[in-house]
Length: 484
Image 1 (cartoon, rainbow, N blue to C red):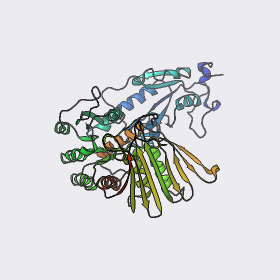
Image 2: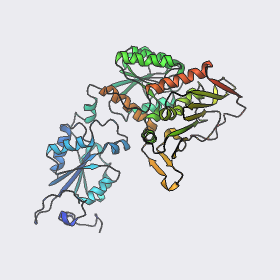
Image 3: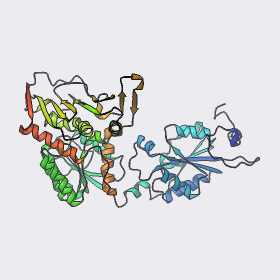
């Protein structure tokens, strides 16, 4: 018989008669007394008196209180970023209050239904800010929404003294997306943007400033995403004004300029990060660890393709797509390649490259990138090794999935990971956490990568690299048939 079809007395039957998970503690039962069970859930990060009051009120609804503490991974899957304490620390903090009779982790969607069934729960209690959201649980037990304590929250405690007023330089559709993703990161508040001659309309997204100087004055940190030729000067102005900087890539069009930005940041004790969103995606991070662990043997080739006729960089394909395409090469093989050459197809209107292929030679390995808006190819990433290879399907730079393949296909493995906001959300979170905690993060994009990318673009532009001219695009070359 289903839960709905049972009487209240049946639902309150002794624990020994019910399907509890193995090795879970059970409340003592009197033969003539039913136990009313209450369950509630929360992250319980930076435990405060608001949490305590909610737990006490939940306990008053019954005889036995079960508290589910949400794991960090589950929180990330729901879009919640910047949980400060580990799951075990939060569980122990809840236990130490002495209010809960039992504390369990919450780790997956649908677990609330499982827990209500397995623990034979009578009442599900949750804060009133979730009113209506959990009405579907009325099929399994009574749902009670509790008014929260006014005037305090974990978000406020996380932000206390570390709230970051973020100013944005530039205006584009991607910046509008960046502003939306900031809403998911605790402690970050966009104060406005200086468009810097970009034409995309950010009206309604954030306040607009008339000058860079006024934006810098109103901000604690800057996100620099204006035209590539102006990024170095913008980032340098922000750092010299004492502001932490997150800059789109390339951060500069010359290696010496990239080095200068890091030098200013080091001298002033500031955070300077390069914003290549793929580098902050969980799948890419796990992929690099897997390759470095030797699962596919020694990497001998990395091929990365990034093409999209829906995206056209005013500065050309190498500058627009190169930072992403070079990321896995520099991460897997390093930045000390012995030779590099390129071939480019040029635009018939503005002289920029609409397609470029770069080949790298390393000791014992090689690599190549294909980038472009005037040509279309499969946007995949393939990393070949001496034992097997990694295949990441198109568009690999937004991946939440990849495969490790071997000669014996029965040994092949597939990996799936949650992707939050295309990596933008995690990019913002890491930047904010580094500012707040003062700890150097373990990033998949390093200072060496940033400088090497600027050097590659510099050499391509000034003739220090062999570049083969493929001519000029033909009529109709930029017509868009496919989009990534």
